[in-house]
Image 1 (cartoon, helix red, strand yellow):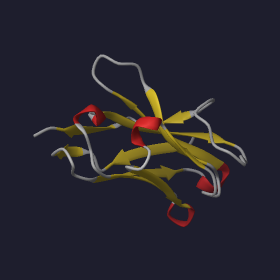
Image 2 (cartoon, rainbow, N blue to C red):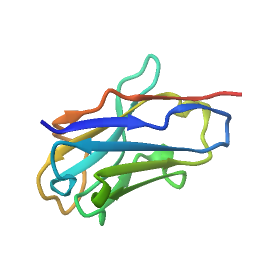
Image 3 (tube, rainbow, N blue to C red):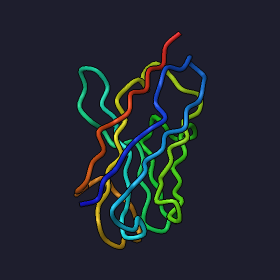
Length: 124
């Protein structure tokens, strides 16, 4: 079973930056597409960004376009989410998730393995 562990969350002021990491163990991450999701207080979980196996295809939720960047280093079995110009509405628990397969394009459906999440709080 693929295991995922998120890290990098914390408290940051509006306009600040954080970089989240999702470390995988158990299997080679080359065979997995990865998505970042978040769940804000009182809201449903939503997809934030996703990346395909090779890193050549990415997608972003509209509210984070131009501010967040997803990337992966398969040699380190790690996927990152660089978050810049953070806003209070970005406050949420952030999760990474994975699905096995070879994908030309990423999407948020059919994720099979999930991390436990890391809390991001954006507040002055």
